Amino acid sequence: MTFPWQTDDWNRLQQLRPQWPHALLLHGQAGIGKLRFAQHLAQGLLCEAQLPNGEPCNSCPACTWFRQGNHLDYRIVVPEALAAEAGLTANADDEKADKSDGDDGKKTRTPSKEIKIEQVRGLLDFCGVGSHRGGARVVVLYPAEALNVAAANALLKTLEEPPSGVVFLLVSARIDRLLPTIISRCRQWPMGTPAPEPAVAWLRAQGVDDADALLAEAGGAPLAALAFASDESRTLRDWTLKQLAAGGGCDPFACGEALQKLPVPLVLGWLQRWLYDLLAQRTAGAPRYFPAASKSLARCAAELDVGAFTRFMKAVTRQRAVENHPLNARLVFEDLFLGYRDLFARA
Ligand SMILES: [Zn+2]
Image (cartoon, rainbow, N blue to C red):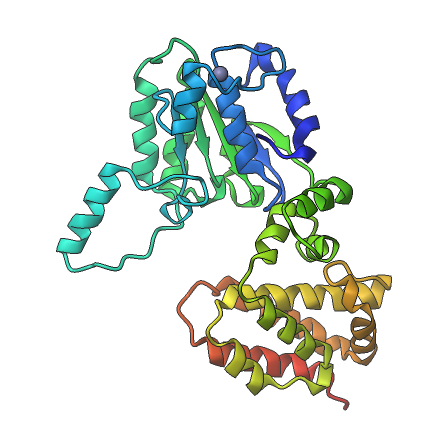
């Protein structure tokens, strides 16, 4: 199934069917359902019922294998860390590799966030073998920006000399991080952020109560909003927003104490959205992510030291660049919220 807001993309893509590009690059904001769309597209390309709208029939042998995750003419390549999100479990080879790692004494290895060259090399073997069903062979790569340099270069060679009958579906939320040479080998397919109405309706159908507010906070991305709704850190996030709303009355040490167990990128995300809204409130008079907090935002925006704000934004961006490194979260948060409080210090 695709999502309700993807019908138009689906229908327009089907017009490419007579001359399907050997590589398609689906790109757009994170959290709008591009991966599921690509997987559905892959199933449609492999389906043997040939329905007129390109939809998979869900009952032919190809669809059955696809849904069981063992269609021999299909490969999905994701970083190890995202295997669960893509509906995959580690295959036998990976498990063997994990065990041998364990023998070397590295028992707790962090799953890789990159697509590695070995994974791309595995694809070359796949491309070298003919189709098992006499139809297309399909490869989904997600997210394409996770390809490390060596892997990207290996993939580029394949895209430059596309094996006949193989269709690549690359999915990316950060097209700016892809090699230009990879982009130029693909047919680009931008996928827009859905209109609020279908997104809110869908969220409500998933049992989300404050769908409007969550969708705004997620920048209009419904899947990101759904993830927020089930986020266990929701209470702390509300508490943090109160701290931010206090402006010069924010307590940096309480923040460090309360938030130290949370992942740094999560808290940085809250802070960055709040800062964005402060600026939006000041310049355009309307926040984007936290419309419900517009009164507090307006009060804070009025008290803001603009020069200090610009410097602080840069500091937060720098922190974002190292957010995945092991850091003392408590110190990072104290430092950030001290910087935030100082934005309102009266000279
Ligand atoms: Zn089918």
